[in-house]
Amino acid sequence: MEPRFQHYAAIDWSGAAGERHRGIALAICTVGEAAPELVRPAHRWSRTEVLAWLLEELPADTLVGMDLGISLAFADRQDFFPDWNESPRDAKRLWALIDAICADEPHLSVGPFVDHPEASAHFRRHGGREGAAFGGGRGRFRVTELAQQAMGCKPYSNFNLVGAAQVGKSSLSGMRLLHRLGGWLPVWPIDPLPARGSVVCEIYTTIAAIAGGRTAGRSKIRDGAELDAALARLGSRGAGLEGGIDDHRSDALVTAAWLRRVAHDPALWSPKGLTPEIAATEGWTFGAT
Image (cartoon, rainbow, N blue to C red):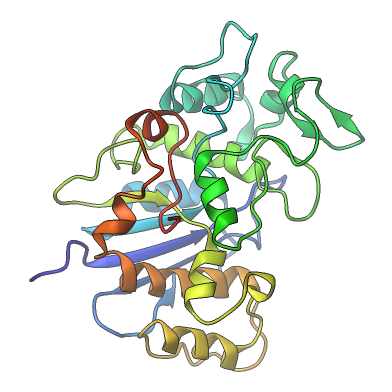
């Protein structure tokens, strides 16, 4: 039986300020066991270049995993932003709202949104600025993030914008990219999985690293030999990179190989916590069970 996808790409994403980021890396592999390869390995990507690559250079029938949150928590309060009359009712409207508020902000940045007088009440921002609706503690979590936690991972709330491990700004900037895909690429599970063609999904690179023999606490790989060991556990040939490697590139390489190994598993496309409402509002992380 021919595989549903012919290529598997993983994108390690960044929400950092500025145009170009060492934290962005792209890797891709084909069916079989050939090692995944970095796309433009010496290049420092911008977020808009990643968008252009997806729209103009993506090979046919590619499963694309993006390391970001594709939405915000909704199910816990039946709303993204309770008490804000412009709060959207689904993820696609959320993407559109963020992009509209940040329309004049370059590089898919999201400063105007997190500083918006209504939206900011829901975020924990730098300088000890915690919005009254943030909720305290670790913040609000999506259902998929609770599933990640049950797997031994340590997810962060997308409403938290503080700390080295926060993923809030990268997720919000990613939502601007998803909006600008404009329907050219379906985003699972917010869009249903089509019978053919390319698809974007959310990934959490720690899940791929665990499948490659790492632990959640040691998911980051910064050595070429350790990278090849993880790839071997995923049925892939080694990348052959010697010595040190930054974890953004290793995350992308390992996750591309992991996607190739598990994309055929129907259970991962129908996790038990994924309802039609969750799919439309919060989305899901591929591989979270």
